Length: 255
Image (cartoon, rainbow, N blue to C red; front, side, top):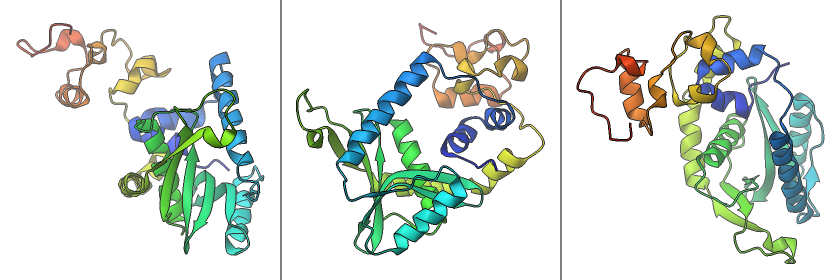
């Protein structure tokens, strides 16, 4: 069974058309850069798990079995920390890197191999996981982003490798916003009709650009640092190509 994953959901928020097409097209082989990022990520996760010797890891690859195992572990008061906890509800699937008991609830911890706690992609990731956990019946009492520490130096113990940032408020707020488009995302994912494409920033490097906008050689997204709001205004007015910009439109010198 094909589930709505974090990648699918977040992609659908940016461009429903691309999410719909990707569900039906087999992805290509990962590039060397992709493989390197995956390898680095796995090493960071391995070191983070090693600092939690008493944790129990959910190893099932199939999501239904993994979610059931997670539920059983959470029901066992002797289990304090769970690695790769799985949650599955209404076709939405996610895995939390770490969940650990905190009072009567659970704190969710997301591990990333970066140092920037202001990264929008990280915030989106933890918001999605928070949303699915909540919908599945486990609203996190706390959300932590665990990153590499800027203060770490070669030779230090792995305990000094990580830095934690509390993301509870932002994650819970963003999860509520995402929940508002839950049903809409299901319709996009399962619908037979391709969503009508809209020109957005993500079109720049999209493999489906030519299919969505045949003949549009000079899209307005090529204008230097065009603000998202300004782009939306132009597209809403039917201005897709640079040559279609109305006379007198305000542009900065670089544009």
